[in-house]
Every structure is written in C-alpha cells, then in structure tokens.
Amino acid sequence: MTVYTRKLFTLAFIREGDKVLLGFKKRGFGQGRWNAFGGKVEPGETTEEGAIREVREEAGVEVVGGVEKVGELEFTFEGDTTLMHVIVYHARGYTGTPTESEEMKPQWFNVDNIPYTKMWPDDELWYPIYLRGGKFRGAFHFRGYDQILSQKLEEVQTL
Ligand SMILES: Cc1cc(-c2ccco2)c2oc(N)nc2c1
Image 1 (cartoon, rainbow, N blue to C red):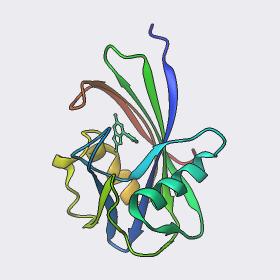
Image 2 (cartoon, helix red, strand yellow):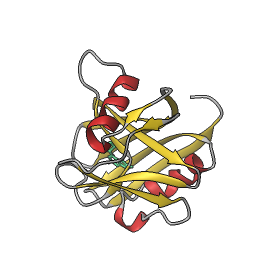
Image 3 (cartoon, rainbow, N blue to C red):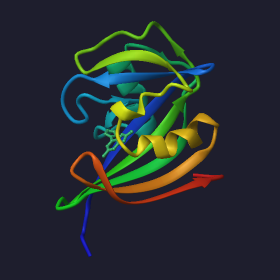
Image 4 (cartoon, rainbow, N blue to C red):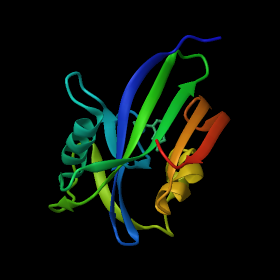
C-alpha cells in the first residue's frame, strides 16, 4: 500500500449561459491542454481564496459573488508518491475581460463543443456532471499523463 503526499490544488470554472471559459496552458504542468483555471493552494490562503487568485492570475478576470464547490478530484501517478487533491469550483460571477497571461490563453467554448481531445483524459468523464449542475467526487490513477489505469467517479448530493 503506497503512502501518498497530498498536495492541494484548485480548478475554477466560469460560465456564461451555454458557454464555459477554458484556458490553454502555455507552459508548465498540463502544458498544451485546455483546462479550467487553477493551481497550487499557497500557504496561508483558503482553497476558495486560492481559486479566486488563480482565476485573476490566469484569466485576468475578477470573481464576483464568490465560488461554490462543485467537486473533489484525486489524481495519482504510477511510480510516484504525490497525490493531487483538486477542489473544483464554479464562480458565481465575474467582471472584466478574459485576457491571455503567460500561463494561459483563455477562450469561450460552447458546452456542446468542449475540446476533450486536447484536455486531460479524465475531463470527458466528469465534465458532463458539472455541466448539468451536478456535484462529483472522483479519483483517477494515471500511467504517465495520458493513460488512466483505474478510476472511481460518483455524482454526490453533498460534498
Ligand atoms: C493529473 C491531473 C491534474 C490536473 C490539474 C492540475 C492542476 C489542477 O488540476 C487536472 O485537471 C484536470 N481537468 N484533469 C487533471 C488531471
């Protein structure tokens, strides 16, 4: 039984009707894939504060009305003792215009046209729950960054 080192991350979604804002990761972890906005939670900040900070830094917009938790994900990798614990949020509102940063190039996507082939392979499994307003808990064990060896995913009523 592997003993994992848990590291806390956030992902945050911004929606506008039938469109969702995603960012193309230009460098670093997850480079070359579209994802929601997020990253490591810094010491001294709550996960909600971290999510709001990442939206500001990566998309150049301010969250208005706070964020609500919509999911929890755990990612582990074969041969690695890191467990990424990702808290997934939905922003209640935002102000400003999405702007490209050094990290991310933001773009609106219709919920019927999410670019799953250019995203992390777990996304096509849990996005549908988020997009219809559900809450979820999932765990995905990866071989490398492209192959999911095992997975658990459930829709939940409360997180
Ligand atoms: C392994 C993995 C990591 C992340 C991640 C990095 C930073 C925040 O989340 C993912 O995000 C998504 N959508 N799938 C993901 C898989």
